[in-house]
Image 1 (spheres, chains in turn red, green, cyan, blue):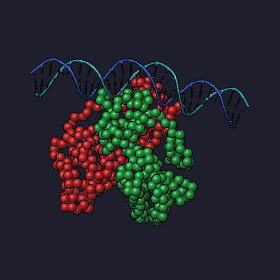
Image 2 (cartoon, each protein chain N blue to C red):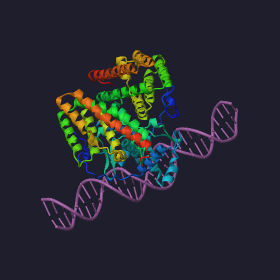
Image 3 (tube, protein in one colour):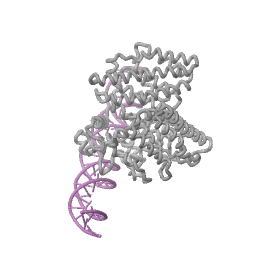
Image 4 (tube, rainbow over the protein chains, first blue to last red):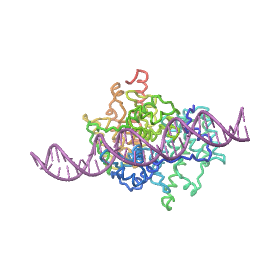
Length: 256
Length: 256
DNA sequence: AATGTTCCATTGGTCCAACCAATTGTCAAG
DNA sequence: CTTGACAATTGGTTGGACCAATGGAACATT
């Protein structure tokens, strides 16, 4: 396994160092345009200013603007037509990959959309876990135990551990597509500035430990149905907590 | 509703005209490179030839190569590092949007991956339908009836109708994320040259009509649980048929 | 021998200044 | 009113130049 040497190993033993991620001009431009679109500064169907104008506005070369627009096009946010211009596409046509930015908007959180996202992710996790319980190998189970212990530890970034668990679950399914989804999910969760909700409500991933242990125990007994039931419990717990937080935040002032 | 004028209306009354899809150079380059990666002509971790070399190879300007690489980067297929080069990333890091090309490879179909895809899509459709049954409006139900009749009709492209049904279901969920997923799904299904399997096995979307009618009947009786059960039946039918086809094709020669 | 330093070729990032090509609206001819 | 030619607008492509980061090789230091 694990011939993935690119970014996989980086999250093997995670230190709190963030990669210097040198920023390229077109990325900056793309981000600003993206935010402008989500802000509603450009309405759906509206045209962006012509490239030459944007280049002048951003004080960069037209090339950088063009590359930025390539990114937006890839995200499904705009449609480009020669001779006509660049028009904003409806949100529902956007790519999955655009969701993090749609939801986490600087300091602001799009709570309604976050709730909908959770509503989608929850059943996905359940199905993924169901398959994982069915198809895992002993080695993977051992690895899961290791992560469980990390979650109990005090030095670790527990949220990072939780994300790794999700990825491990997807590996257990032996399904490439689930693996892809889980990795995108990890990116999404990592991008989430959930510290806000966490600090306010004092959530800690470690609170899932009892249920996780119960699930693992069921697995070792060979009782897969019981394991699935426990899994359902865990996911419902996470699901309801997130919705609850979102609802509270919605009523109790902004998340800034 | 329906302020989405970009591509929504196009699929409203679908004529068998395919848009002239003006092809840009960088798209062609991107496609070729993408295929080369999926073909294994570039191994994971390997570096692509430098931009200048590729430009010469493709007989295009370096700019076009760069824009192509932006696209691949957006799909999560490659990682770009200044001074180092462009390296191929592991498949599991790829974006959802890369899946169609990963599976439908010119004349060839990646059957194993297609099976895994179906395994993922099936439970998604089920959950989507469940929510749709819960939350639909009378107008949407009426629209669904209309589509059902189209499916029974003889003039329509029945597979297109089926895709529209999926999108309508997602609209019924009132969940933006499901809507996004469904629209990407539609694109995926539309890109699928399933004619192959269809012709070989004589599948026709209309064969789902009895179950669809049963489901709609349950809904009108107000019996949502029964409707969900019928829905499960439909999805299982589709699911098993697809897996069956894939398995048969795998054993019975190539799909070319 | 091991380690740290300097230097340089390679490679992506950005810029500029043209010109090509498609789209759209205008306006005159029919 | 319709048609078709024209011109302005806007994205697409090109060639060439220079900047900036990386990684390895040669070299110096310990």
